[in-house]
Image (cartoon, rainbow, N blue to C red):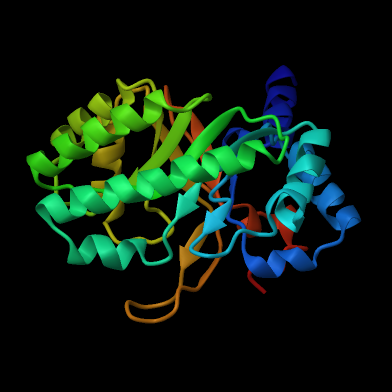
Length: 278
């Protein structure tokens, strides 16, 4: 009987990964009313949410209304419901095509310019009068564009300088393309984590670009200080098609790693979001 009660307890508990959940703001989410936002954040907390990681507060030229806009207002409601806020900075809408095109000094110069944009956005978001527990840099890292050691060294130097300018902990994420061996990637990630920033590794379960066994090898090699983002979706679009995905239960069992879930709009209680899959 005691064993049954324990099993029932764990069945009823919210997923640990949902304690930190990533929200990707999209312009169409502006259609939600204040009451809908309040209910969404209430349900997020009820399902185990403690920290909301906002992927960006500026995407290209989209600023989501600034200090008096819908995003800032919704985040105030999130804080009222008890959610800690890690706020994303700036992402160039052409980021992924630009890093494909650039190399060497050109890539380093581009990164420096984009970090400058994020620093300006950090100062802007401070005028929103929100309690900020951390800053999220939405320029994702991967072992394709940073396969070369000199690129990783240049990135390390820039992130070190950028991190020193912030007034709250820095978060950023990375994913694996299978271009570095698990041990080499783990060493790189450990060096970045040594900057006293929070590095998150995307588990790749949703995109499925690498076989499950390969993903497990990369996960097993990760230093404990690197967190794992559990992808709560399954991609159904093919290469070259507009991205499309359906919800999927996120993985669990991160061991010594902190966990987060990507993304809010794929979670069952967030169907009210216009960006949620039909």
